[in-house]
Length: 259
Figure 1 (tube, rainbow, N blue to C red):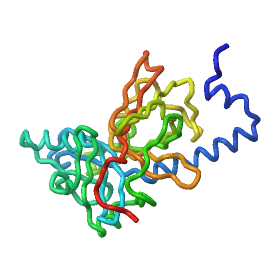
Figure 2: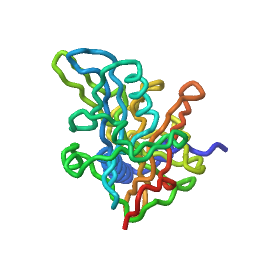
Figure 3: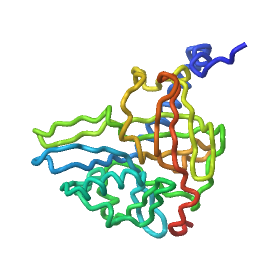
Figure 4: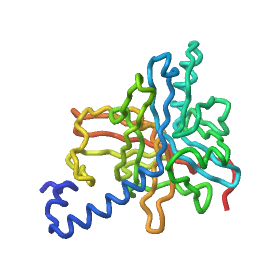
């Protein structure tokens, strides 16, 4: 006998328990969304050109405050600048700055980059929660644990270059860690298991989630929701019925102590 999917088990709940389940999970995904900050790099709007989007989050340690994102996001900026493009790199509400000059720690292999920002920039970056872990480095997640994922995919981005603005549409979800390896975890996502907590439609198969890279991954814990990693990849398999989300974990990032 086939095991019921998560969505099928949800449908078997009473209406009261369904409402309770949705309310709790809706609060969690909204919390995850509050940790994410949008990253955009593109030519000045007056010039026009390709717009690249990504995601990040902000971490405060004893050694300073850092914007964390995926290393390949910074590499994308470097590649375009290396070809002679004039680009603005913008994180949240901050004025444009050069991310390469801000790199405090980076691993291309792990696909993580830490960019140092000032306390004043941290105050002005926008309405995102700044993570401050109880201990550093953090413990990696284990197989079977739940994680919250958030970011700003391209498919939800709003652009109006003629008016001089680029808007970012937030995304957040709860997934289960399927594979836990050194410095990297994967979540295998079956569409039949997905449940919409916000009451709207779920993303269609094949929906563009590019731009989610660098977004925060939080562990669903009994005490709090610690930042444990950043999204590095998401791909589709089996005719869009199965997806794999991959994230780099932060336990090996030795960038100062935190009390």
